[in-house]
Amino acid sequence: MKLSMQEIGLLNLLESATGAQGRDAVAVGEKLVFVVNEGQLGRAIGKGGEGLRRLEARVGKQVEVVEYAEGAEKFARNLFAPVNAENVEVKNGTAFVRFKGEDKGRAIGRGGEKAERARALLERFHGLKLKIL
Image (cartoon, rainbow, N blue to C red):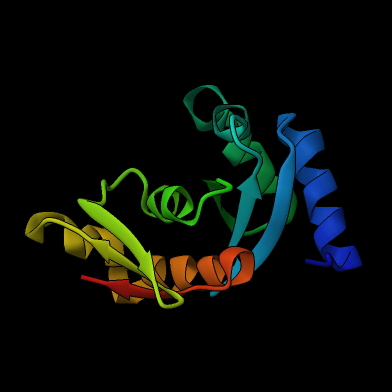
């Protein structure tokens, strides 16, 4: 995956604002989503969310952070955190993610925004389609 100069600039901004190392920055709707390296999520968020607030002030947009995982199943789970997926199965180029009834709405998000974010990032990093069950 190649990054544009704008994406590289945003990743540098992430590192200078939070100390976390990122892999990608993607605009999804009105939000900016940073994908950080494994083990860097806590650093990116910061104590009490301070890192996120500092980053949002610098970019002038609402920011979300997702932790990368090499395996598609783990990455799919990370995309929906803190909502826990009941089951994730990858087959035939699609990640099937199942949630308990009460968690499905939270996983999809208002207007489907969380599902759209997950769909875009799963395709970008693992070349998979997403099906929420």
